[in-house]
Length: 95
Image 1 (spheres, helix red, strand yellow):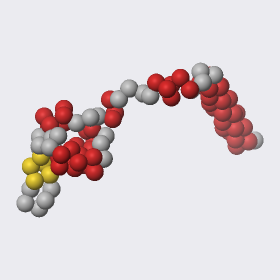
Image 2 (cartoon, helix red, strand yellow; image 1 turned 180 degrees about the vertical axis):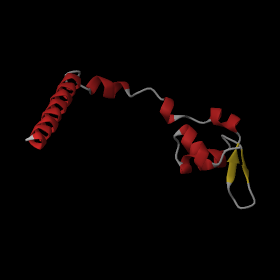
Image 3 (cartoon, one colour; image 1 turned 90 degrees about the vertical axis):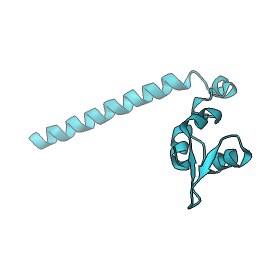
Image 4 (cartoon, one colour; image 1 turned 30 degrees about the vertical axis):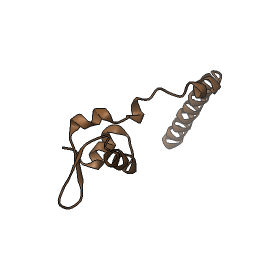
């Protein structure tokens, strides 16, 4: 049996979304004496999992393929600049 928090961790759904699924009867949950819900692991299969959704194809088309190499080149340049700075500090320490 899983708590709502554990169900959130497994599915990526919000607390409110899980509670809506319980209230609407999409999933069965047992309510404890203190008002907390416990959900059988088998019920998770009935919930949508945002983590498993395919990326928005429209957003993918809008993303420019030129952005990726540019970002990679910028990362490489920044990495090299930092290496030079570290070496300069090391050289200064030796003098």
